[in-house]
Amino acid sequence: MSDLLTVNGLSRRFSDGGLLRKRKTFHAVSNVSFALKKGQILGVVGESGCGKSTLARLVLRLITPSEGQVTFDGVDMASLSRQDMRRLRQRMQLVFQDPYSAIDPRYSIRDALLEPFRVQGAMPRSADETVASLLDMVGLNSALAASYPHQLSGGQKQRIGIARALALNPSLVVLDEPTASLDVSVQAQIVSLLERLRQDLGLTYLFISHDLGLVRYFCDQILVMYLGRIVEVLPSTAAPKHPYTRALLDSTFEPDPKRRRTVTRLAGEIPSGYDLPTGCAFANRCPRVTDLCRRELSTLWSQGGAHQVACHHPLTAAPDAIIDERSVA
Ligand SMILES: Nc1ncnc2c1ncn2[C@@H]1O[C@H](COP(=O)(O)OP(=O)(O)OP(=O)(O)O)[C@@H](O)[C@H]1O
Image (cartoon, rainbow, N blue to C red; front, side):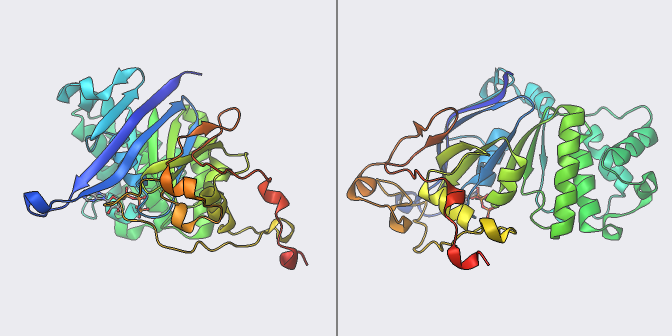
């Protein structure tokens, strides 16, 4: 399987609005590299503010990188003219977290679904048929075409958001927390819809979430981000080796009491992105920290196969072996 998307040494810094001499630089994404194969689902996980959405916007070139390169299907996106970029955009689409703000409340569902064609200046010959087939694709009745967003439930709106993203037949879909604003039962329906669409349409997903449990269930490969950097790259079935990934996993809900583990609460504050520490950014919260961690940042190093970790003292025990005795009734 060939790579659809490759990202090399991608960084993005933001300057605050201070006067020139006092201006401070915020490191939102630092030196991120990965490859995403056609047909695969890559999860990007981390706490709020770790740079997930900035990474998504960089990949889609909605913002330009401070450094680094994004290659889509063999084409360096920085080399494209505006017109070529517009053409390429059809092949990479974004599904937003908040379906409420993603659809203009003044548009009927029909108009919302036809908008991508209008923007590209390529209206379909039979607009009604196109709208009906998009609605059918996401499991909605074609009668909804005449409705307005306020008449729809959150789940229905997210289905419209997905249909709109798929209208122009993209290859890559970036899903930015697509289920975060939905009820748990609706979340499960949206995840299974996304899985069916991926199989039926041969889509490739970049799936952004703060929920490691969901990412492990849905994705093939996972990138774990902490303060703008990748701290671990792991296949979804692998046991985490970075203490941060471990702590994220421990904080997810495990319905099976036999597999339930001790919940480790992360102590300490996330350092500021204005003032990155020299060593590991997780050092002040890490139970395994040593002087080496405070002094030197570990590069990502191989743990066998596709598994890589940026940690001087990676974990060795399998996670599910660590069971909280108190929770086993
Ligand atoms: N245009 C901007 N100017 C200044 N800082 C920004 C800008 N965009 C993002 N940031 C900062 O970069 C950091 C990363 O933000 P980002 O939205 O990528 O994180 P995230 O992991 O997606 O968080 P969340 O899950 O809360 O959406 C945040 O601290 C944010 O304040």
